Structure formats: C-alpha cells, structure tokens
Length: 251
Image (cartoon, rainbow, N blue to C red; front, top):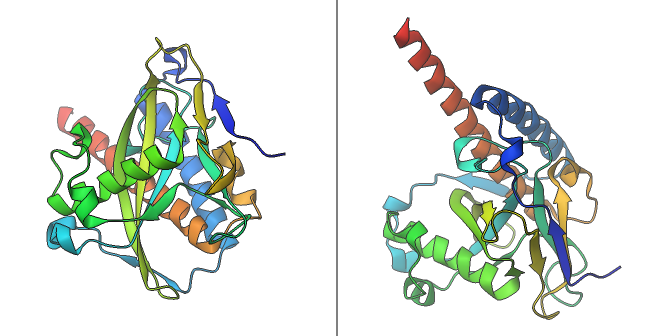
C-alpha cells in the first residue's frame, strides 16, 4: 500500500533514564545493528574515507548528501552523544519507479550543489562548522526540505562520515538528523509527508531494529545506515570512556 504520510509518537520525558543505563543499552543495540548490516550487504565497492572537512575547500565539495533521520522515544536522547535506544524509528522513502533505485527503500538523499548550498538559507546548526562541512549540512537540510514535509520539530544534525562508491565514483556524505522534540509541547506525533510523488512513492517510519531485515534495499543505502551506526557507536564508546575516567579521578 502506498502512503503519502507516516507518523510516530514524539519523544517523551517519561522515558528518560540514567545515562549509564541508556549508554549500555545503546551499545548493545548498536553492536547488533552493525553486525547485522555487515552480514547483509556486499560492500567491496564502497570505501570509507577520512572525514575531516577542514581539508576541503567548500567550492570543491561534491557528491551525494544522504540523511538518516531518527526519532528516539525518550526526550533528549541524542545520537551525537552515542545514544540509540530501542523504540527508535528511522525514516525511509521508496524510490519512484523509473528513477535511480526505483522501487527500493532509501534514506533522503540528493546531489550536492556547492554554489547553491553555500548560499542557502543560514542555519544555526552549521554556523560553527568548517566551511566545507557547512556546505554538506546545508545540502542535507535542503534535501529534507525538498523531499519531505515534516511536522515542525527540533532536531540536531551531525555528519557521520563519507565513503566512495567505486562503481559510480560518487562520494557519499552521511548525516544523522536526530529529532529531539516537536514544537507542540511534545504532544503531537512526528508526521513525515511526501509533498509530491515525483521522487518517492512511499514513506515509512521503520523501527530501527527491523532495518537489517528489509530486503528491498541497495547495498549503498545499507552502507549509509552502517556508516551512521558506526559513528554513533564510536561516540558511545568515547563517552563511556570519558565517564570512566572522571569516576577514576574522583577516587
């Protein structure tokens, strides 16, 4: 059945738990997702690249901007802090038949336009980034605005990494947009809609645990999701290590 809209409950303050508990559960889920995605795809033509946008002039940035949109159940849970809890949903769209990857599930993505994305509407989330990273984030935000109509919500956008598709010679830049609240006093559901059917024929919030089971998905899209999972896992491990160090210093 084709859908033009999909919704999930907003993040709830009632589901907030102690950081140690959240980080431990998150790492368990991240390990499961990483193993499952690694086993599911053939990634030999995909090469991870070093993500340091200080090395790139903004005018030289090109390739594809892909965004993994997450809605976590607890208010304030942040992928950028290594948190990815059970009950999280990820937004997927089905590519319209006749287009690239027609009939398959994907994340919102599109080509980067350095000139356009350098001049796009300023956004506070990119103000402190290196200029090249700002171009990437603006491209991601533009793709989301163009492809999806979302219930007004507060979100945090971070860059998870980039990789080279050696078959197409495209560099794919992966971002994670973590919805942290809605603007309706956290009571309205998070609604994502397709403004038209030119690019996508369906849109669904999928439970994050079900992602490895989706058959109708390209290896490139799976690698986008795997890149996001690996970045969140790295942030999780780093945060837990910092907490351990602080606890040792107190002794």
